Length: 88
Image (cartoon, rainbow, N blue to C red; front, side, top):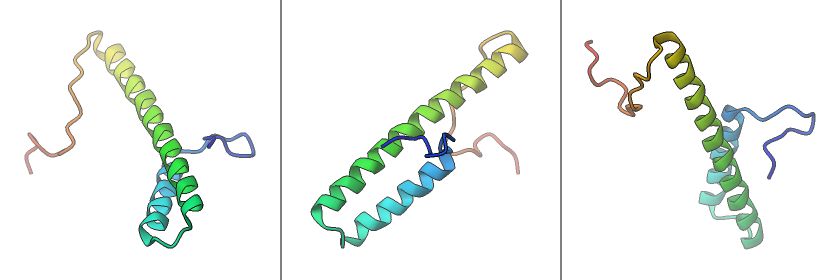
């Protein structure tokens, strides 16, 4: 599976995630023949790796921006909860 589109435009992370969701629905349906299910699973794994790499790239860019603006590495780990420490 290639993360490149046929026109040379790279797939966006949003497009890749939408395709992963579609593959998951197909696999959960249980109606695919074994060979097609294996192909879909493999494609989903490739898309997952593509998304992981894109997220790593974005994280590196954000860290560079923070470093340039602060001239120091005051980077905190990402909080998945998102709202901790924020007042409402």
